[in-house]
Image (cartoon, rainbow, N blue to C red; front, side):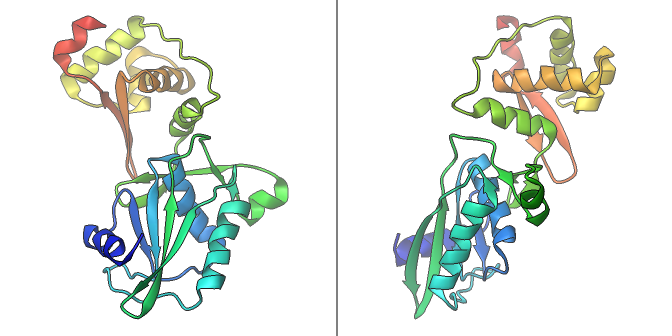
Length: 225
């Protein structure tokens, strides 16, 4: 990673795999972003860069790196070790923090309360240019992406067929709408939807205030199921 690489990332701007941070105020705050990248598709955090892409530089490389490492070690479960590079940039230093997509999803956020009680309660993911808390369904999907997850067993029954018919006509559906459609509990609806996402038959779309599901294939392929 060098000057030109950093300049290219700044030109791309913040997004699904890039975030700018002027400084680190606490390891807990940066841990949420680290977790979201590890739980999604990986990403890069540039420390010493303002939201508008201007270079502020970091005040102390050593203390900032210590906070990043502390965040990955003590605020993430399982721990995450980011790749860290210091890049001189126009007389200022930028810390490039690279987080790879994890093979041990999901990673949980451990705040002060969580560490005290030994509880893992919060999972974060990346959606568009934001870090958001994952729903129960997304957490289950992440669990199934873990390398130690059991093999997938999928059966297509009447509930699934009615779901496909609805999506072909209306494009999207929420968990609660699916439960009402086929008259089953939210828990059972969640289990069906998670299995279909894992099988690649449908997709889950997470936004800040809404989560919904769509078909993952062209409707002309419907008869192949």
